[in-house]
Length: 232
Image (cartoon, rainbow, N blue to C red; front, side, top):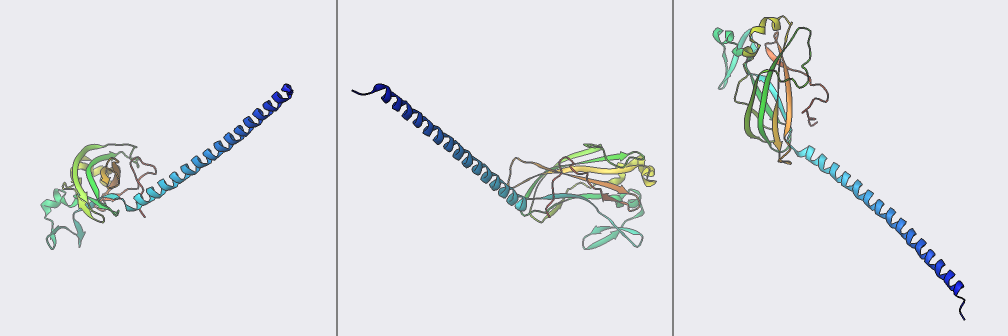
């Protein structure tokens, strides 16, 4: 006759052992799954870094510059004409033609950029003020569309000239005596071929130097909104 209490005890031990084995397998499976997930995440991050590096090396990088139209040598001002230069008349100089600039865009990247628009603003900083306030818009703001595809290594110029003399106007004397500072600032928006939704906005800032009769590029504060790192 079977000893049922002993059989039941054996059954309980077997069940407990099975439960322990199942728990051990569960813990092992959980650790294995976590390890696989961690490896997948690390691989995804590495893949994303590789993709970002590729895009960064191959995408378009547009820089914006305000460049003078006229040049000065021998005490005289000259404007470009086909095949050379022509001296400005006294009337043109009085009208401030020698101070005119153009907005030049250059694609420093390896693939085309689709230029969308640009903005130009003017700020006259008061005496003792040396830096433009953050997010300053300025006065006499011009925001214009500029639908243009700019190839790699190519440059183009916005059609409108920047008449510096028209901006500084009544502040000309104070600016000439370095009491006030004339700042021309704005941005350019464009798309690159690796994204049809990410609009890149590149700011620019120039200060008018009366002694040079031209605009001079001003350094941008670190971390300025809308800036992007230019390629090496």
